[in-house]
Length: 257
Image (tube, rainbow, N blue to C red; front, side, top):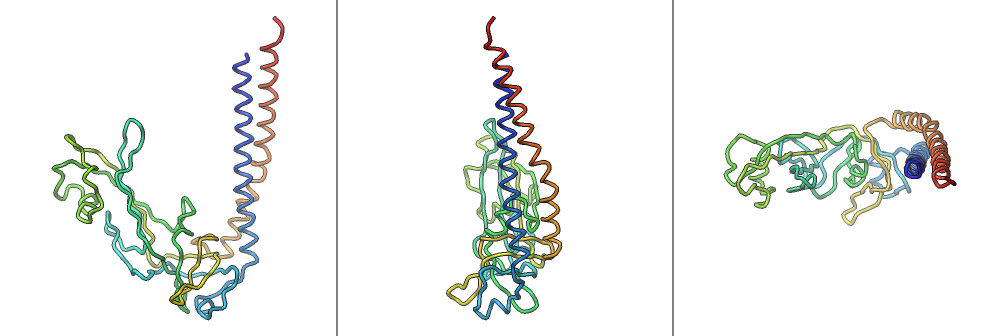
């Protein structure tokens, strides 16, 4: 009985902790919503004048940065940013064999010009809709050659696969995950602009990105906040009930007799 009570109490505490996490995320969304409603929408040409507001809302399309458009190394797709990872399953979990990410800034283009975008602003969203992911499977071994696994062949030719990645004797089954940002995708950026040494304007990481138009983005955030309210209120109540029930079990278990 004591063990059951302790487990129930811990489960209740877990619900309360989860409620705290969701409440924190909801508060971040509320702050973002207030900023979106208050921020001034500007064009790239407005930012190029050098008069930079504390926060800016820029609506445009994803564009190449100073490094231009490139081809993704695994699946050979046109992109302005890529990340590629090769992993395999091991008894102790997933093992990463290689992880390559492009460096440098992206661009945001509107009819008046182009400004730079820090990719960290996109990547802070774990499932950013700007990212397009492609998965593939293949095998690596010391004798791996030929066109049987084109993504792995391309990565091998680019020098992205270390020698340690190949199986010593048997072919090693691996997973390839590539994420890219394609040029021309619609993007709305809420960020703090700052000037760089070459007079370019960079939209920094203290903000957020979306593929929605500003009004649609605001509506989506407002709906998410409203939908989560009752859920967040119910979790700590349920957690407290479990804690009380668990405490009663413990008291019964340690009682006389």
